[in-house]
Length: 635
Image 1 (cartoon, rainbow, N blue to C red):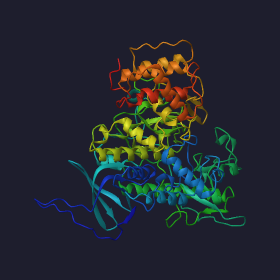
Image 2 (cartoon, rainbow, N blue to C red; image 1 turned 30 degrees about the vertical axis):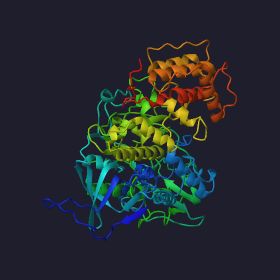
Image 3 (cartoon, helix red, strand yellow; image 1 turned 180 degrees about the vertical axis):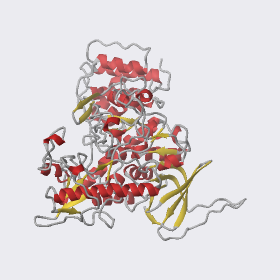
Image 4 (tube, rainbow, N blue to C red; image 1 turned 135 degrees about the vertical axis):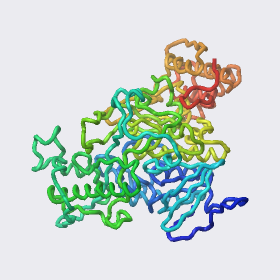
């Protein structure tokens, strides 16, 4: 992989616009990823791994976005979803620190790390890819659509450079590429009448979630005094009751706050560092910067950073944590703060589909089956930060609306009416409510991985991203170890994992979604017996006019084979075989998957049924549309 810094460099070539002369560009790529954040970094890596020439351009000197540059180095969710590049990153953290237990240092997460370590790991992952080039410290200046792709111009210090690309992936923090490309989008809360979400407000508004200018502190030991200078216009009042202390009176809080020492353990990182990202009378800060100019944003960020400085000063002087100081050398900044704040919300494009909380909470009860089109899984709560908003009465009480784990539909990454642009990070086509969970780090990483797959496949097959078959994207993700269904009771190490993922994505065998406090789950129950009722109901969605007959309440091995063959014949995915050949094929599969001896008259388990369906009927090959409808007439 090549690292291209253009700071202080002159242009390698000039744009030639004279009549009759071909335009020349400084760089060309199949896939251009703009923004090397949590999504963008993974998009670039995955695109390159599939063989597409890929260029990633990032404004800062680091990769990782919120994971690293914004200092949010405590992973939220997906602990039991060992999916794709998120899992690869997690394993590299384990290897760096020595074990899984070594990163389980704070109570908000079981994967915490130093931002500088995360940035180094991401750079190692990116630099290993020969088809990936990275340019740091470069900002998008202009964007133009062409007949066969895009031309983007970037500034890098005093220089400018141009890039010609077939497909662009928007990996920016605030969806700035989507806006520049003219993509319609929403900002703020949606009306319940538009989304059908009962918990959404009556009327839409432009209220976004609070942002946070995180800080990383370090414990310099007993006796050390790392108190920062008193910030200008410092006022301790906003921070009263951030934890239980003498300054916190009972009439100042609705619920009793946690103890101060316990609060500090929230974001305890390895090597005695502490992530300061505390929402309760802490350093959350309200400002909507989405439509601001760059100068306006920087002014707002300065105020958010001042607010965090005030909070640090409060921790040091009012609560006695003066042994904690700004961690020196953690970030490549003069003041030791992150490169930019943590944005919880962005523009949200109008995509091929919009993923609502109804789709997430009850995926099998909707008119559309978006779960069949899934490409990125998540399991975190619907978590909205609005405590810093000046008028709380304008904000609905979402309070962790119960959802199971979920899978994001591919159509959420693709603008409704723009070719050769893919949108990732927090700007995908979801509702404001859904963004409360899809905004978290692992989901954004997996969104990026899916975007990279889609971009690479589009350029390699010579079609627009919207014309790449959904099943082809999903198959490439499975090959990369990424989940398309959010089952927490099977892992990629299970022999039948791919078969279960594929069959789950058809809906023939459905998982069971559960909300258990913070533990949002979808269980496949692989070892449970396959019931005739569940299989019959699932098959009717694919072949609605076909009757399947069972001898009992549970599906036997022989019945499973006959049903799979009958289904495959209807779908055109298999040919009729006599009983002996069919049973022999199943026996071979039993051996291949490690199921032991095949007993045709005994009930099969759910994972065994998935394997039989996959090996004989292969219903995953039936193409689907953006809403998960089967394209083939299976009547």
